[in-house]
Image 1: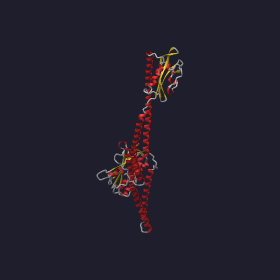
Image 2: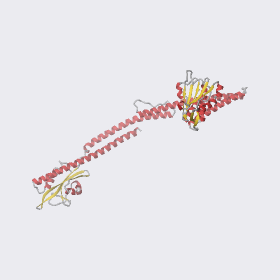
Image 3: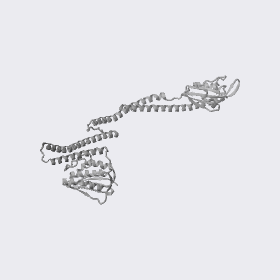
Image 4: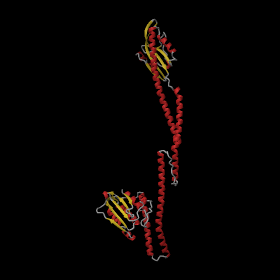
Length: 470
């Protein structure tokens, strides 16, 4: 990448120099041509004035001859590349006025008669233009000449030709030296920039390869003075690595928890089954009851795992409809009264004086309430309270327990599917996956859930579910 960047920068600078050189040369040539054209017209008009002065003062027979002699003599000093004195007849034909016979004239540097526009000369207009790299000017004048003893007024013209200077011979070497210096400087700068940009990318590539290979402790260095974009890329990669490491740790903890939840009932089932097989159990009915209870516990664990997997893959349906959230909450709490009696606890419902209208799936909302009550029974010391209300028109359902409460640092994470709380005093109730299921189901129904703890000086926890109003 660094080589490609260097080549691209050098090529861009070279192209810019070439383009600017061509444009500058074109502008210089055009300006030199215009300046030369104006100067040639001025000089030609000066010679024309000299011809009239000679004709009047000296009264020479043929002023064109003397004018031609002067032009040849001054050719080098005037930097002319060609000169001529021509005459134009009434038909626009050119001839040589410096001889007694009307011979055809030879124009300088390959100019053709049409180039100097004889019609314009007959009309008394000066003519100028360029042909190839040459600039020419023709200025007409009237001269009285004597031919075969007869004096006549003849239209003549002075034609001057010059190659305009472009300055390339003097400025060209300096421009080439400057261009080479700029190209070398561009190559050095491009190499430096390439090294500055590519080195962090190579470091990021190496770190991501280590992360992909399983090394989640790898981090991209962020030295001071790094460009903001590269620093942002490094920070993003490092954040990703940290989250992956956290997810791996949480997953490991989750798997350990699930393994424990599986091992405990399996140990009971296996122990009682072997005891029955060996005839060491007198009360086989009680043993069968324990085996059935532990089997149901395994079944709940597998069911919750399947529910979580289905929620994650969005493989579940919702039938949202207006309902009374207080009625659903009361029905859900009533279903746990037998379990609460077995645990020596009490489940109570705080009745609402009016319906709590919300939009939700009644079956999914009942599942949410059941999971929250089951979680509360795991930590309650004496009582679980379930209620519903509409404060400010917003329907909410809550479940309270009078347990030890939740540590403040654990509150934001209690609904994470892989989070295992260190909350003490828990009973072997549920599978430990209920709160993760609650968070996913409530979010799918357009609501939210939060935990509040402690509720008083002795602890206590409240799980609050906010639903969409009907």
